[in-house]
Length: 363
Ligand SMILES: [Mn+2]
Image 1 (cartoon, rainbow, N blue to C red):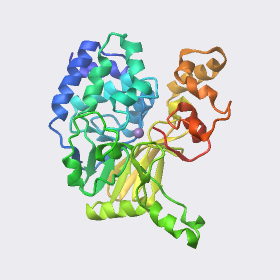
Image 2: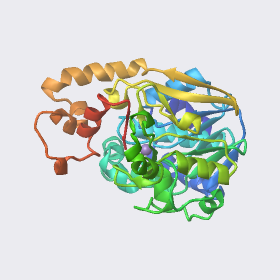
Image 3: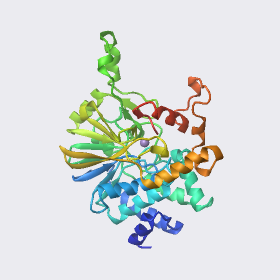
Image 4: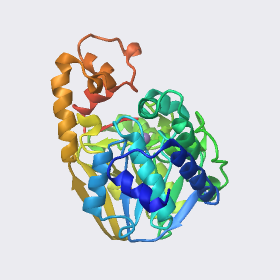
């Protein structure tokens, strides 16, 4: 099947035959294996954060940001899991990358992993859509091992899915990572896709707490159980040492669609509106024309999702497929749990937290 023919089907939300998926994934591997861990691109480019299988919202992105190849895109990872259309989402991105390799770049997120996709929806979605015996999940997760880790725009803007690592001082150290593998549990590669910036509110910090203030600017253990949180000092040091101006990253739900840290040294871009069809958040794409000319194009969920939402809301009482998809979230707040019982990776925890905080540690 020709690439344009595939695109036509995918834009309509149709599934490609398994043999075609296999051939496309094989071709993409051949293309990606030649790429460095850190790709260099130039403005203008539109930066996109987490999509998480929200296919209709991704189509919305191409509507408001412009279609490929008219607009250049950098996607920061987390294409699959959580949403109901991970297969459609990742396959459209795969074919766009094959068709317009210099117009679209795809970084690896922490969900581009065999282990994570077995727990958060993509594995199940593949067997639901292609059948138990299909190898679609295997073909697609195989290409995840080839996705690049970071991107540098105009030699001065560093882009990554998660954040920095205590094991990475220089960008050259990222270039020598052996990335052609499953994301490890720890080390530089894990940290790049798992870490988060953490800004402390200095106004509330008294003199006696200065020690804690200082240490909180360094790398800290992450509540996610993988990667680290990092403060302003870490960011300033990394940017200075590598002669970079700032960092764009994704990985954390933002109610307003983006979140600025450390006076703009780090910015989170989040591109999944009304995350999981229930969080009520806005999303954004970052349109970058030059270092100092950029615009956060904020958007809300696609109209198609509202239909899902209505189905979801009416299904709470009668238990439909969508309801089962998010089944653990139904227990939110119904029972008291001790701190040791809290699973911060569960939908229930995440939905509960998202309603009370501006930024949350979403997977
Ligand atoms: Mn993520």
